Length: 211
Image 1 (cartoon, one colour):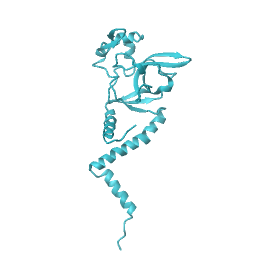
Image 2 (image 1 turned 120 degrees about the horizontal axis):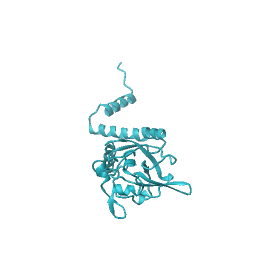
Image 3 (image 1 turned 180 degrees about the horizontal axis):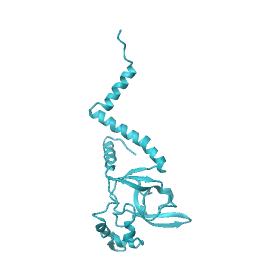
Image 4 (image 1 turned 90 degrees about the vertical axis):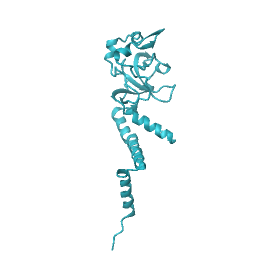
């Protein structure tokens, strides 16, 4: 007498084949969703524990840290002092000289669509030139900019930042305190952030919000 296959096992086999073997558009979509779930709920929290931040990996979604051309071209590009000046003069007013800037991490900036890996931003170890990710009260999305000034108010460290590409510090770049810090950038992976940016746009088109 022929033995009937367990319906549960049969379903699991069909599901396995659908996910890993089927070439349909629905299988492709399911694979993307599964990858997103694994990264968001397993890989991402695990990296957060290792690096001491809730944001171990971020995709750069603006061009505020981009450099136009090579370093020399960017260094002489326009900035806003008391009048129109150069980036060189703007940084010089903060006592940041050209050779000092060249020793900063990410001295050539980075681009929209890059992935940045973060570690905990320890206020005792942060220094001018470090690249911070912080939360501003003026916008919902985190900002990634470079420290240009560190002061102390009531024994609390206060930071001023600037996007390398920007002509000056914006309103969100002033009086950044420890409670706003989300992480310090330490490694860059070019272009990989476009995957997330594209996926978020795709999900928004079908009415799904990705945080």
